[in-house]
Image 1 (tube, helix red, strand yellow):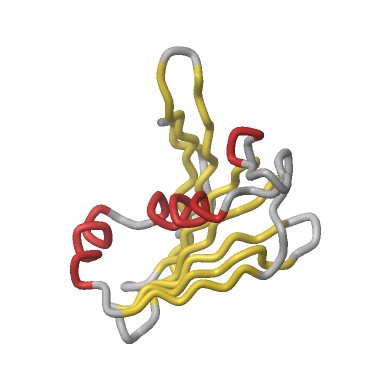
Image 2: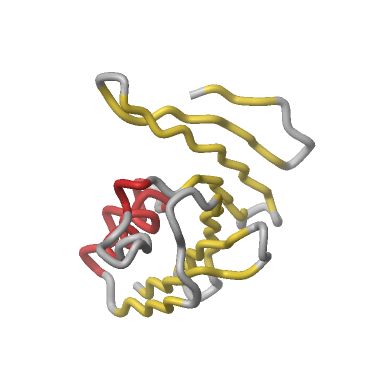
Length: 130
């Protein structure tokens, strides 16, 4: 991964994931809201291999997007997950750019949503309550 120059209170990085010449690059921005909270935004492009028989991104992939957005501590806490709410709001098609945004609520729940920047609307949202 490579860290880029960022404004005060932000961290920007580009990560490469994959193997054997097949890589996905993710651009992540972390913005500090206050001393405790921050918002994390990842920009991605939907891959053709993610689509289902209807030409949309397969619903299993949304769970993977959310899992990838969680911190290591949050992934370990999944064993204590009490509730998972999922909202499919608009289709995500191969080739579309989207961002994955994560925020933590005061009650300890985590909200992750996928946003289509071209249309400035959410494609999906998941709320994880611990």
